[in-house]
Length: 295
Image 1 (spheres, rainbow, N blue to C red):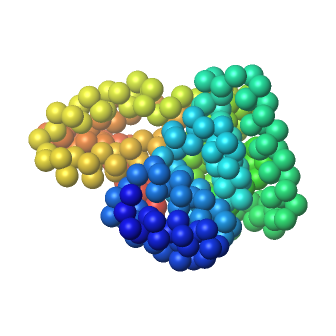
Image 2 (image 1 turned 120 degrees about the vertical axis):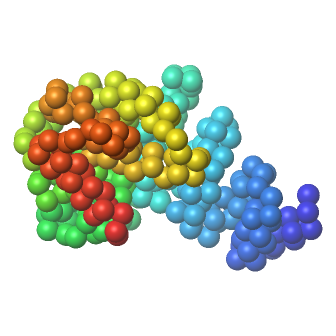
């Protein structure tokens, strides 16, 4: 171990957590290890900087998951960082690898911590903001929805489902909400507006990860063949995925439009002439992405 680490240990023993944090941040910047990560996590925990503790732990999340005591500390960091919904999504993924007694222990710990957090942090104003989310500018909508992750799962669903039919909400926010419902394993039926602002009904249980949809696989297969360098491909693919998320969950794309979606997204055929409907569709996608990226 380095001299910085030993100095941080000494500062921690002397309860000089500010000094310990500065030393460990420098050490972690020079060489990232789980040992330093967990020590830094504990320091953030001590000074009650739960957001920093949560974000730090996420860099080595697997190591926290496999250690029950560390995971229970992680649960507190997540909840007091306002990330209860994201914690539940993670828990749903790992519970199949835990015993029944561990599941009950983690569930009990999470509920106890959440009750404590909500008693100290009223969410009434947040729920009011969610009710009128459409009146806020996009950057504020994103912040309010992030704050909603601090709610219980039930309150998160109750207060976000009505957002899905609001035409003043950006479609990427709606698709993120739907994806959260999927990760939460909700067994609900909701209404939402598609990219044409047409109200549709959706069974949440039928949602899949975006990578599992046929249209995603088809476009990715064609994309890999484009003559671009790695940097250009990375940028282009991120843009394409955002556009696909605007259309998520792909239930309402007309058959003829789906067939030409590959040309609209990849623009890899200079001889392909888009019709009026396809041009309008392409322009709408571009506008949505520009709004999202210009925050």
